[in-house]
Length: 108
Image (cartoon, rainbow, N blue to C red; front, side):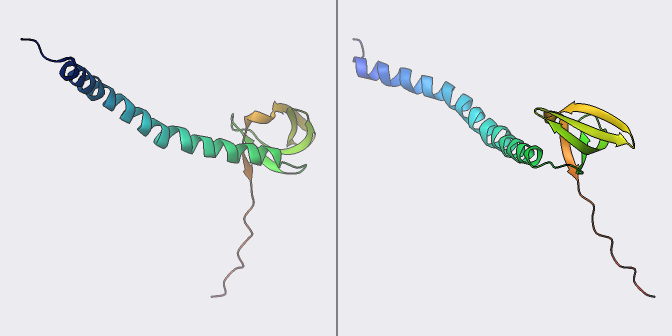
């Protein structure tokens, strides 16, 4: 005697869901731990790059420190030493250097 079709379908569905569930879980973990934080960092970086002004000190992805001299479309001209200029892509700016105010000296 053979089993009715709905029993066979239930077994196939449970087998499919038991093998698919770990893949779905790994995908969900990837999205929440890797993709979303990276997206937030990238948005903050684009905001930083869009807000650069002449005279801002920046660091490039290559570790070059310089002062922004001029913006030409998708390129920036950095002054890396007095009279020395370097042209880079906007996307290569890693961070803006912000000087902390000096703390007053404490009297002993």
